[in-house]
Image (cartoon, rainbow, N blue to C red; front, side, top):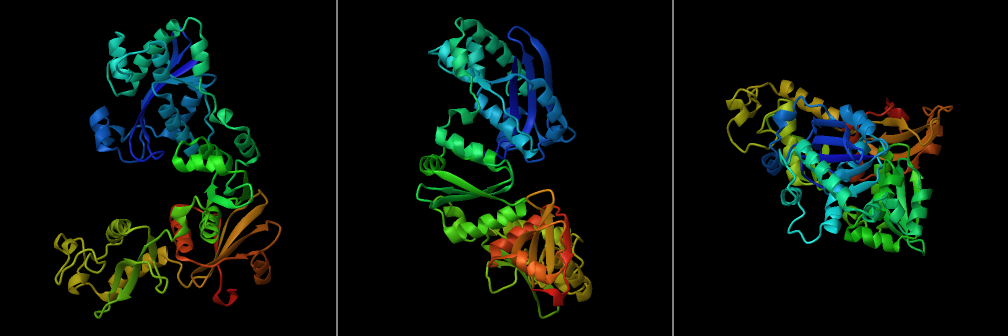
Length: 459
């Protein structure tokens, strides 16, 4: 049984694409026995060239189901089938990535009609779907739309099955799980790895760490490393002799450990993260008129940062959103250079802090609310989240607005006792990256609990 699939996507960076349309025909080798097609709301921007190519735009997808709403139907119609697609590696990767985002392991054998056609019908001028089906007299309507392309692929595949009289080529063309094509050494490493959240360390034969990474599923991440064709991945595949790992229970501690330990160990294949990841920061100061101003500047450990950013463009974009969301003044956030009123004041979206009409207390209250929400400066708190086992919790200590360390404790014990807390916290050296990781994580994710500590209880 086959599931013949075509997928249209948003385009964009590798493994960050979203599905905009999907069509699946369940085919028993003779006839279509089931089918499913739908537009999908990808919850992300569609690249302009894709809109021109497919005709699918964001307005069309506004009320379309999101992927998780159709995931069960996709699982049902593909159950017990081999995935067939024109350039199957692409469609299978996109589908697998979407299911990965849902935490579901979607693994299927695949057949690629491009590869099969090259073997069974050699010497054609082109094997793109449009030109191939045209040269074979196969009707194709709605080119670059999932349903039209998938239906043409059904007819093409049926023709290829008929041409493969011995059935040997199709059997050899089936793409098995990538793990089955790996060297025994890599297969053994994958087999021993946990499908859990944590940090992993790749070693040479002499024990030297050559790469450190983190993942919500270490086993799946290693499969990606060992099947990737990039230059760095191939070098890792050649040099890795063993992989050790530490489970962290949650992604926040995994990110913190990865960042700290890459800087400490400086693995040869982690060049990008050896240096600080965040080069710009948002700070505040009070001007001569008493208004609190916000300012983007280069990262400086000597100054307290409200938020940190990877680059200047990200900082400016974020500051525009912050200004709008908190009804701040463009002049006082540094977005509008002027000696007079800012642009927002001219359209009545600024209350006049730029020309000193709005009272300083009123304006500064909104700025302080923003700073309080996005900074843990001078705070003492514990961030409690999931641990490595069901009866365990993790704890991160913030003291005087600085990350002091993390630890794990059993649910049978109380951690509000400072002496107990001292024994379970693994102390670390605070840096700008760690502060950014924690603040960014807390803005985007929920943790089990945040316990505010009294100032006298700080370690």
